[in-house]
Structure formats: C-alpha cells, structure tokens
Image (cartoon, rainbow, N blue to C red; front, side):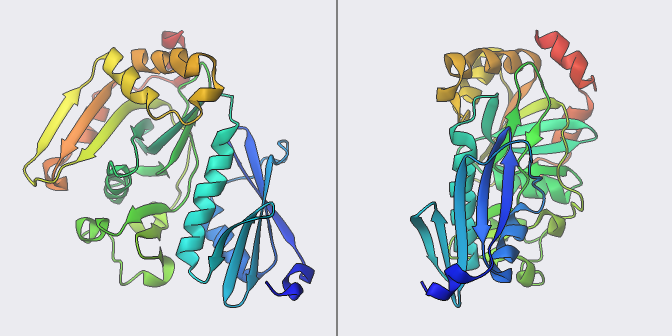
Length: 300
C-alpha cells in the first residue's frame, strides 16, 4: 500500500453493542462512506473502551482492511469489503461477550411486540425479515439480537439487510433492485440493502420479546407448516443459536430456559409468502401485550 495513505489524517469510529466495543481507524471519505453505510444505526458507547482495533485505508482504487496488522481484505469491491467488515467486527463483538444471550438471529417488532427469528445462515431468516418489513414490521436486525440476564428486552445490532442473490426473484414485488441500485451494495453472492428501501424509515428499538419464530424456506411452493413448539423444543433450538454460549455459566442454559418458559415459539416452514398471509400478524395480536417488567417477573 502507498506510504502516503499512512500519512493521511486518520479518524476513529467506535462500534458498540451489548457491552462490547470495537474501534475502526480510517483515513478517507471513501472509507467513511462504507463505515456510515454499515453502522449508521449503531450508537457508540463512550463508557466502554474498545477491545479490538480495525483499520480501513483507501489507496485508489483499492481498500485495505486490517484487524490490528492482519490484512483481512484488499480490493475495490465495496460490497465484499462491507461483508468482511460485518463478519469480522461482528465476531469480535460476540467473541468475548459474557453479559447475556448473544443470538444469531434476526429481530422485528410489530405493534410493540418483539419477534426473535433465530437460525443458521441459509435458513431464510433475512428474506422473511425483508418481506415482513415491507408489510409494516419494524426492522431491528437480520443478524444479532442480545438479551440481558433476567430481561426480555431485545437489543438489536441494526445494519443493512444481507440478502443472498437468490432472494431477488422472491422479493422483486417488494424491492425495486434496479431502481435503487445506487443505494445497494452488491457483489457476486449478496446484496446489502438499507432497511429504508423496504419502507422502514426508523429501524431499531428495544421491544420486549413476545414471539420466537424459527423460519425455514421450503423448496416446494406448496410446502407449509406452522408448529407450536414445547418449552423443551424451544430451549433446544434456541441453544443452537447462542453465539457466546462458551462464555456463559452452564453455556447459557438457565437463561435460555427462562425465555423458553415464558415466550411462545413457532417452527415455520413455507414455500411462498402467499401462504403466510396475515398469519404472523394475527398470532401476535392474540398475545397479551404485557410490559417487559411483567414478563420478567413471570420468568423469575
């Protein structure tokens, strides 16, 4: 990389979530634009010192992205760079977290009711999240949700939706990819889509968790099932999505059990959005809208 880049004025941006902070040092408007695209909804916590430092330099036409002195990405594709940043910085936020349950999960809110959509990559949670946002659900996250001990409050790591390219034909009726191409970052396998393009002008929030929804997209268009899970089934599936389990007492078992006992869970399998209709909304509306404090008291 050109020596002149190291001599450029450098700025710092802290990225904080769930009691953890990482720092990214950058040197140019081009680097700042990528950082702002990814983390504009994430507020830094000035009380939590960064545990890890990343660096992003721009030497036209190439970006150079480092964790300390380890080169993580070098190239000119902003979408691929953004993916490397999200993956590495997100892992660093989760890796040392000991304060609660750090879920690999999407999150939404509907009329004050929080919905957790846990699942491994490829389960279709981001595609379903995008469709629900287009129907008026409030977007929280498509990747990380944190719930502190003795709480049901959902804390979301809000970022652009990371939609795999096969989702394009599925979402073409709710997202104008061509018309918004200048606002979407795209590489050979995914689109990074700002939630505003799906109709969510003010993403984020901290609703109480009222429903756990395990989504699964089926290959057959007529494939559909809606299964209410037992508390034991809910706990078992939730445990598989706790990223920081190794850092927690009993791997977070008792914290997960508390949620499984107090929050209903659905295992959803569908082949098209037409099968869903308003089923999720109607189910949520049937649930009592208890305050977070009342829900927490029930879980103790």
